[in-house]
Every structure is written in C-alpha cells, then in structure tokens.
Image 1 (tube, rainbow, N blue to C red):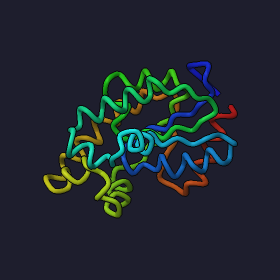
Image 2 (cartoon, rainbow, N blue to C red):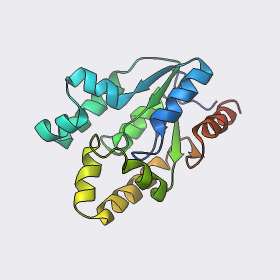
Image 3 (spheres, helix red, strand yellow):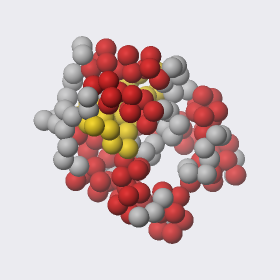
Image 4 (tube, rainbow, N blue to C red):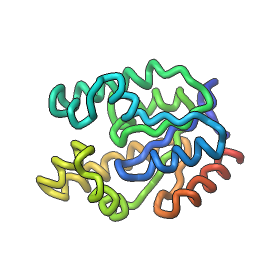
Length: 174
C-alpha cells in the first residue's frame, strides 16, 4: 500500500453523502483496523453536534476543530472517515497525507443528492444550500472535487458498499 507516513492508516475523503462512513466501517472490519469518523469524534470533544457547532460558533470554528483533531491524531491501523469539507480547509489535505494513504471515494453528484435528501438535518451546509439554490451545492461539489483529486488513490463510490470495499482492498494490497 502506498503510504506517506509511518502510520498505517487509510483516510477516506469525498463529498458529504459519498459513503465514507459506511465504507469505512466495512473496510475497518475487513482489515481488522479501528474505525474513526472525524465528525463523530469532534462532536464528542465539543459536546455538541456539528449542526450546533455551526449555529453557535460558526463554520470557521468548526474548521479549526477539524484541523486540530487531525494534527493531534496519533494512531495507526485505522480507517479514518473525514467530514466532506475537511480536506478543503487549513491545508488539511497535506495533514491527512501525513496520517496515511488518502483515498478519494468519487461518488457522482446525482447519487449524492439522492442520499442526502434522506439525511438533511444533520448536515448544516446541505441544509443552507438546499434552502437557497441547488446551484450552490453543485458549485461546492465541483470546487471540492478538485481538492479530492489530489488524494493518493481514487475509487468510484456509486455501487454496493461491499463491492467498493473489495476494490479498496485490491488497491491496498497492490
């Protein structure tokens, strides 16, 4: 497995709704690794949901929490699912590459929209984008795609999660 650090982690990046958490949990189980969802960990540390952090402290504060979290993470043999915006702020993509191999789950925009419609309340950026214009969300998606593409590896995220895990295992073992 290509690795940029001494830590043997796989970091999953991609847009909200790309499947990072679902795939990450399956991949961790398959490899015997621990699973970390950065959003869940930040919520635990902050004592509030991401939506509450955005509402009470603002996006900039949340982005600082994300950056601090990955800067201070010192674990090995983990699958790390990041928040969709994490790689796009504060030079976090560079920090993520220090943690291990960064793998972009590239899920088509239409598939993401269908998935996100089911879970709007917990996603502050989605909620504001859907209530304004859908063009805003597409613009955010397009902008972030360019950053995600600087990942070490990429896998298509528009199929069964178990199939995607198999594809990742092929990449990891090559």
